[in-house]
Amino acid sequence: MSIYTANVIWKRGKQAFTDNKYSRAHTWIFDGGCEIPASPSPHIVPLPYSVEENVDPEEAFIASLSSCHMLFFLSIAAKKKLLIDSYDDNAIGILEENSQDQLVMTKITLDPKIIFSNKQPSKEEIKKMHHLAHQQCFLANSVKTEITVKGMN
Image (tube, rainbow, N blue to C red; front, side, top):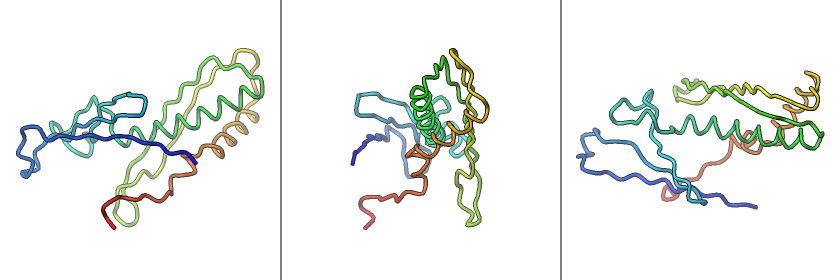
């Protein structure tokens, strides 16, 4: 078992807050000290109460799934002695209402462009490698995971 943490910090500042006109900008801090400015998407919370330049949770969700898939793909390629020079994934997620009228990420499409330098595997071989990477990506396998919120019980 492994335990992972993220510290998410938001502070009100000088806004009234109760009028619902306050900045939703916040910071994610990870165990190595990396701090990432975060905010809801301007598609969800209009400007100026969101910060377009900051990472939003939806983008981070897509990036984490893309990153997990890529890391397993790279590992599989290395074990096959395939030399990869670059892996560039322009991942896209679609947020829309489900049948219960809830906004959910209904589809994520990974679209990696991979440059091999020692030999080019066949399309079938690449497809198998992607399938195996998808099977091994624990984040992709966790999308239906239980979420516990402390203080709700």
